[in-house]
Length: 354
Image (tube, rainbow, N blue to C red; front, side, top):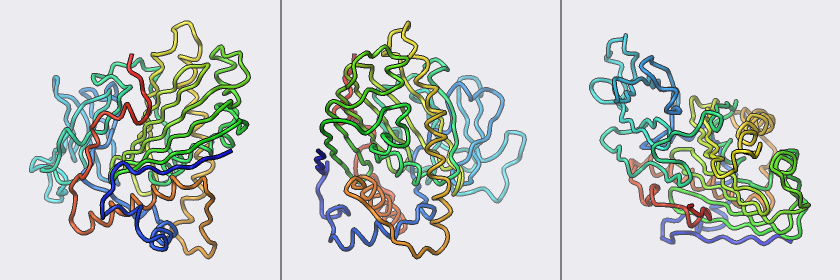
C-alpha cells in the first residue's frame, strides 16, 4: 500500500507548485536540465584534505576554480598562482581574480555568482557532518557522472528507484506498506519515504550483522537546489543509520563531480559496515550512471516521445518545477534567497543528535 502526501513548508502566492495544474504539467514536460545555470550559490568544490599548498583545479559550469592554501588561508582563484590576472576575467571574482571561499563540514566551498552577495548563511545545513570536518578518509570519496547535475539529482530524489537499480545493496521492493511525503520551499525539496517490514538491505545483512528478515525504514532525500547538493539520510531498525552527503557539482553542462561524505561514525568500530558502506558508493554510482548517461543527450535533441510519469514521480516532477522557477527568477535578475538554507534541518530529515 502506498500513501503519498505533499506538505509544502511555505505557502505563498509565488509558489510554483500550487500553480494551475496545466501550467505545472507544461513545465514538467518542458524540462531541459542542461539549460539550467543557477548562480549566487556555494558549491562544495573539494574535500578539505585535497586542498594543500599545491594548486588543484576544479570547475563550476566550465568556469575554472584553482584552490590552494597560503598558511591557514584557503584561496580560490580563476587563475593559477603562476598566471597573471587577465582582462578576460569573469564577473564572478574580485579584481584580483579571487572567488569568495569558505571551509566548512570538511569541504572547501566556492561561491559562483556575484561576489558581493556571498554570505555564510547560504551554506546548506548538513547536521550530521562535523562543522570542522575531520572525518577519516575511508568515509570520503569521489565519483563522476557523464550527465548534467540536475539529471543526477532528479534520479536521486526518487527513493523508490533504489529497490530496482540498487537492490543488491539496499534491498528490493518487498514490504508491507510504503508512505511517501514531499516537502518543499523555494530553495529546497525533501522526499521522506517510510517503509513497514521492508526486506533487509543485503549490505546490512552481509556486513552489518542484521539477522532479521525485515526492517523498519525511514529514508530521506533533501536537495538544496542552488548548490545541487543533497542529504541522503536513512534510519534502519534493526540496523545502523546511513548518513550521506551527495553534492553534484556541475563541472560542465554534461559532467558532474561528486565528492561524497558518508559519516559512519555512528557504527561500532568492530562492525565491518562502518568501513564497507562508504565504499558502496562506487558500486551504486556506476549503477546510477548506467541509467543517467544515456538519458542526458536525449534532452539536447528533438524528441517526439512523451515524457511519461507515474504517481511515484511526484518528487521528481516538483524538483523540475522548482528548479525552473529559480532559473526564471534569476533570468529576471532576482537572485535573492527567500528561504534560509542554513537553518538546522535535523527535524525534517529525522536526524537525532547524540
